[in-house]
Image 1 (cartoon, rainbow, N blue to C red):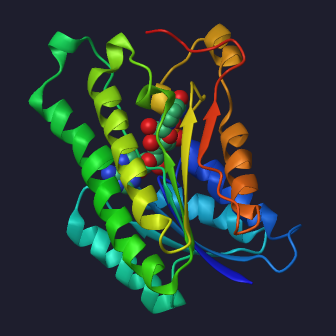
Image 2 (cartoon, rainbow, N blue to C red):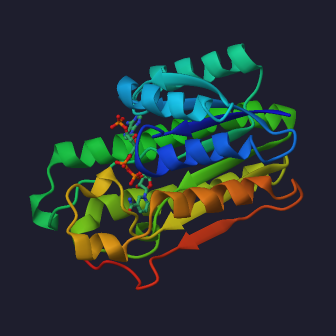
Length: 243
Ligand SMILES: NC(=O)c1ccc[n+]([C@@H]2O[C@H](COP(=O)([O-])OP(=O)(O)OC[C@H]3O[C@@H](n4cnc5c(N)ncnc54)[C@H](OP(=O)(O)O)[C@@H]3O)[C@@H](O)[C@H]2O)c1
């Protein structure tokens, strides 16, 4: 069955792993025919991920947009519905972080973080939900973070944005349960991705890998529609990296 799946931040890291895992699922999951809409700001990343996903038989579209821009979110949702007729799944994964001591955070750091993590996530969810609400089905994942429930000293605005995303998740549950839409809050601890920049080897061996997160997401998606995995909390076995 055709399933239209939008994945934001699909060019790198966790989002790329989610795109590849949905594409690979088409080779083993009966009747699963994914139509992937891959989104990030960097077209070259999306093109590379698109080629890999197509090699597993998935249909792939890419859209290089900034989710902090509402007009670009409109363009994404309109184009997806025009091309495929509906949206079955949204993976709210795109996110940014500026990790510094509290007193060094600038207004630009603040606006940059909030415009993607909060404004972009909110308006994309709002517009996609209005499609799902009408057809009374769908699944929205939010890749929040352990930093959505635990504070880290160097992560003040990141934590603020992720705690804020939790507020949206909980509000969305109230709307979603009335129209058969599943909401999953994915809260990973440290995952080795480009978000971390250069990582020393001992720290890298402590961290989770993007495919650890993506496989849990795809498994949650394939559960029967009657069952909603409300939260996935995934941590390195050694716990959190305290910074
Ligand atoms: N890595 C971790 O330890 C970890 C742990 C918990 C939660 N998370 C969360 O997981 C999500 C993915 O993180 P990651 O580690 O995979 O990060 P990443 O490697 O930096 O990748 C982030 C992706 O999001 C895209 N993106 C960022 N801002 C965007 C915007 N405004 N519009 C469109 N695309 C945008 C980036 O592409 P462009 O820059 O090309 O746009 C990139 O493809 C984030 O929400 C992050 O907060 C990460």
